Length: 231
Image (cartoon, rainbow, N blue to C red; front, top):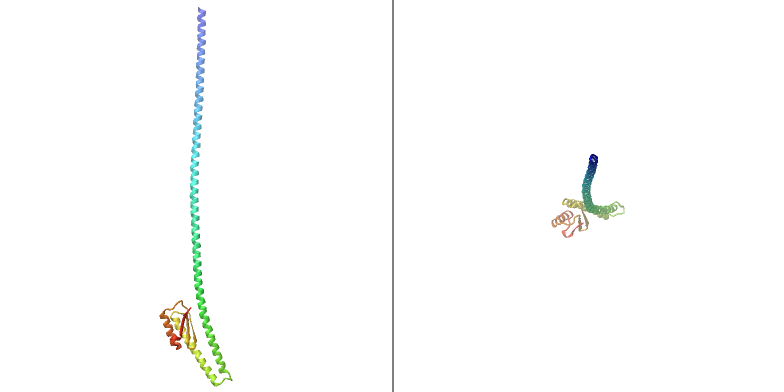
């Protein structure tokens, strides 16, 4: 019986040791699994945090990209607006330049027309005075010729006086007409007929009457023999 009791106690000890070993192994296994779970969870949380950071960076970049696009669009619109304004200004400048050229051409045309009229009246007076000078020169040759008769010399003297009187009367008439505002004018006398050319587009009836009075008084011409025209 003692031997049986000894074996029984020995077996109890062994069972206790085995149970303790099993409990210890289970505890260690549980601890290991828990650590692995914690590590896995921690790793997942870190990855999630990393993903969130990446997402945050991505969003920030996208916003900046949008800002750049918007700024670029604004700059493009501003540049287009500036270019459009420059085109408008260039067009307006070209239009103004064309208008100025047109005005200059119009002014130049008017100036040329005025010069042409001035030249006409200057040339006409010169040709008329040259004709009178040639006539006087011809009569003076008769006076100075030893072959001329006294009657011829008498007639030549009278013609020279008549030409000089006519020249003086014409000069007075032209000056008086100029005081009426018609500086461009020229007068031709052919016997009893007097032709007056005035540098104007048109003449009022009162202007015509004043010119007729001047010519009639200074050149002793009849009103019906006075011919007035404009140029």
